[in-house]
Length: 321
Image 1: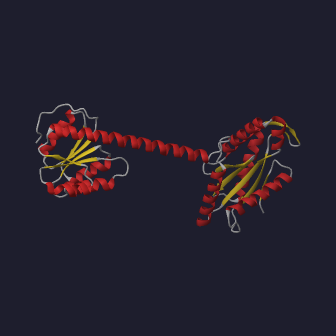
Image 2: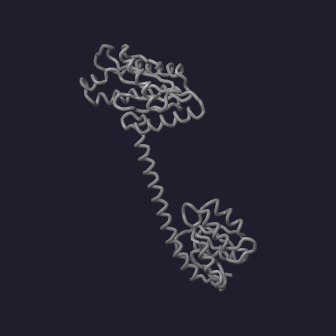
Image 3: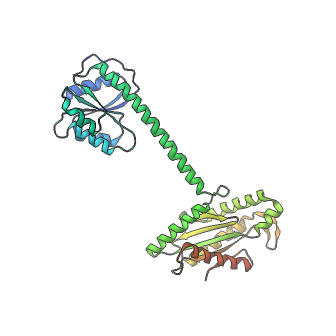
């Protein structure tokens, strides 16, 4: 029973769960809370209460202490155990039996509401609940903001700002990841190291801003020629690394030649060099070998193949032997 006529309270709007096997009393309490402007769900046993609590967070749960089957104290303990984000303020709804006070508080209850319900006492409790709910909502919002900031910082640390390719940090992680998976499951994997031909002359004759523009355009062309599963990272300076999971050396040569040709066809302009007036790249390819005890050895073989491509005339791809 509710011990007064409903009036409109001044607490902030709350989402409330009422748990009580006394259906008439529960409906009366729900009607009072709705008249205060709150959103109310109503259940009549502990199991149903936990099902509701799993579906969504409540600002307040008003739980009858004495219920058949699962007691209010058990409900309180279970709600506390399942909560990770957010906080549900729990009011234990009980008569004057003081023996339940300590067990309920130890189970996670925040306060008590006496039966029959006194409207002024209820309103006072709701004001406290609203303050606690507002505080926890702010904490949750701040936690989401911190997570978002952290995720943005992590993405920024793993993305090269100029080209949009993965950063050196991302490259290290990609190499370790693909190397470990290929080793574990006995699957092929290859990598290609690309270097922009005669890049120093671009910076020397056209300036570093022009050099940056060339790198950005090359990265865009390369990205358009790669599969979604390929890893594309900037090694540093004018060098890029493409990691090709599930690709043999033969597959990698085909893919790398496609990238090299696409850059040549893109006709990115530059001052004349021994190779002409457009930007070109050279590439060195290495399939992961049983002899590669580490990613550094794997990467070094591709780098040696790149060295051969550069000294063999540039604008070509060469596979490690």
